[in-house]
Each structure stands twice: as structure tokens, then as C-alpha cells.
Length: 97
Image (tube, rainbow, N blue to C red; front, side, top):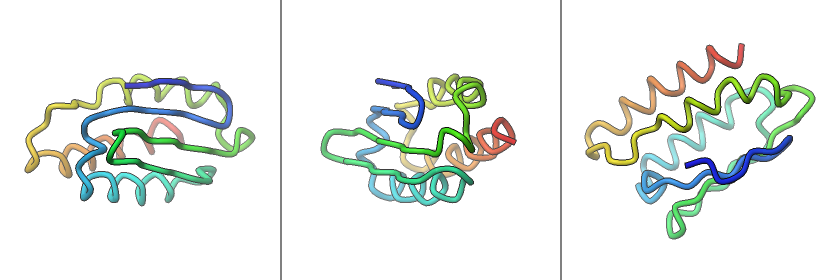
């Protein structure tokens, strides 16, 4: 799922990103995190690019959350995706605080 993870930039790939409702919700949730500057999701390639301020979200903090992204289940049925996303975002916010 994580394609690259360097200071200031994370690239992810997941079949979940082809689900437009899920992708838009994820994008708005990620943009609400202090320090996230840009989120681009391409449903066609199932890719996500997240750019962030490396001073507000240093790599040392983000490496703690990389396992959360790795645990995101790509094969969730449609009706379970948004509830799973809400749990994921709660865990992500807690890990970043």
C-alpha cells in the first residue's frame, strides 16, 4: 500500500481509492490534519499523494503512523468502508497528537 514515504511526501496505492465516495471522504479528513498541505487521489490509478509540512509533521511522528496505512483493508465491502475510515482517522489523529 505505501509506495514511497519521504519527508514531505507520501505515496499510497489501494483499490479503495477507486471508490469515489471513500476517496473524497479520506481526502477531506486528511486535509483537516494540521500540517497536511495537499492530497491528490487518482481513482483511475488507485493512487494517493499526500504532501505535508515536514516541520509540523516530522518524519519521526509519521513513521509511527505508517503501520496504520499498511493495515487499511483493501477488500472491505462498500458498506463497511466509511465506518472503517472513521476508525482509521480517529487512530491516525491520536497517533499524530
